[in-house]
Length: 180
Ligand code: NI
Image (cartoon, rainbow, N blue to C red; front, top):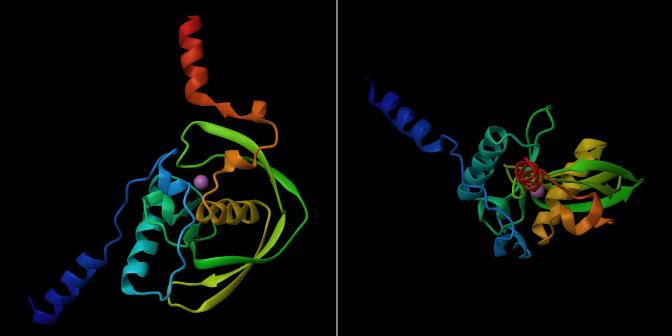
């Protein structure tokens, strides 16, 4: 083998994204305000790729760093149009209203309707440290707001207006079993 080929092989192995363990509610890291990222270092890039891998494998449409136990302001999303990563995301503008039935990888089996802005403009750094502005509406707008909430220690059930609308699939299955 050519020595450069060996270096390339080691590099690729080293950079292979890895799935991380998803932290579940009510782990305290999900209640904490995440810290801003000063610089997009190689460690942050690795975190982003690992988060994308973890989100795709789950599968999910969004993931925030606290959900993999890292209290930093990093989110990823993919609603089927390719992955987006934002470091230090900030909502610059929002408008309109929409309700989506939401779920969360940190609260498996829980679903509830959440009303949020239907359009948002979010600014953040991408994986090269460049400032990026994303205009989103519909599902992506909801996903970005849900993930940014995670950075502020909020989960979607905190946003539910009527607690009786929260569906707990695991609990319902248990109840059914009890009934049988
Ligand atoms: Ni979530």
